[in-house]
Length: 579
Image (cartoon, rainbow, N blue to C red):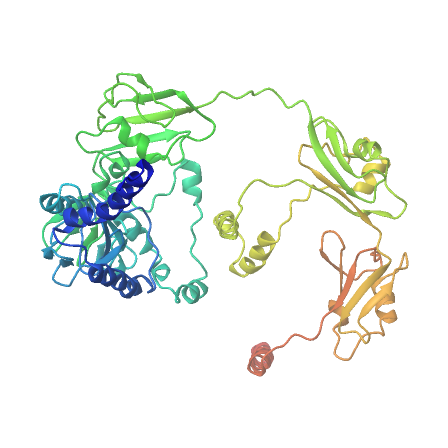
């Protein structure tokens, strides 16, 4: 019977498609096509996936398979080419072994992840040259690591084995970060962690490293078997990541105390992290460049020089765009320094700048000025002048400060200013309040400035200044120990008592002698006086009697009685003597 060529080709194609999987199964496993085994693999993946659903602490870096040592609890995943492409999970047992499908038990003691990969591929190649095995780390184990030495919180911590020594030492300065639910409470109790730079770091342009020059290069790590020395700055160089290893179970990490007698090397100038390191024989320029964390935006990387301690002058260093040495990587000497110069700046005087004018003016907005030359009244005239409802007495000029940005820095600056003062201890609280709420006003009287352009109150303005023209308030707020606290309509040329009477008068217990006018712009408290008038925007406060404990009052009366008794006794003594 004659068959057409198309029919023959179709039949051959069908047979090839059918036979290829069977041939692959024979190559991959040395046995026939086994549907039961494939089903078992799929089921094992479903049951083992629960290993990945438990909570896990965050880690700090990508695992380096060449330096990551496997241990009990690590979850591995592997896949083989050939017939079964499903992912399989395997857990390292407490004996430091793994159970591989159709391969039995394999010890991973002392093995890195990369070494296990290579070993499994060799085993697989011995069985079948056409099969590849891919192995990866799906979840790291949690290990106990002990910290000792020059640290704030010594102790034993549970951390992921993927964590590097540098991160572990850093986190243990704030150990509550290692707790999933305890961190907020500790932070609240401690008032937060002061991570802002100190004044000494600001003056020396240092980065405030968490470890000293010696400690960061000589952290000792004692493993269950053997020991290791971590050199954190050098670990940033390519090929030296093993100097900042991943932690293992049972590690004992000791941070040494500083040795001030050792020689150092340093890098400074326009770099992200100016650094000083303890010198070690064989150190090179690339070490300092890596420790500096890169150049700043204003760095001139064509002007990098090495200053050796032997007095050979400045030696230029060439780097590429990645801040890596091009050409000879010069060996350092004790005391050597690398300096990264800053780009040359145009130091010519600024020809013009911009300020902002807000509030009760005809044309509020930005105004171009000549820094230090353009005066306040000229600026107000350029925006069309002030509106009829403006209050020059409440208006102000702000000059933004570029100093301390955080509350802790402001508090630090306040205490430093108070350090050598001749104020009394009782002044400390008031001084802290004044420092905390200081505002960047420019001292000037706008009313005088507008009347007299030649007055010193007609101040010169600078770029970034903000001029605010306030609206005139039509009421005065009276509160404290008065009968009807609240707003009273403003009336010119009136004293404090007039507004108090219009607020219902003094209430029972009011201390009239301590009533104060709170000035609208400066918030300064002013005593009542016939020469002082209440102005728009002011407030009036009438205090209550001070809350004095009964014991304090009794002590006061006892002191007074004692003084009177002493005076009477002294008088009687003088009379008897004069007789």
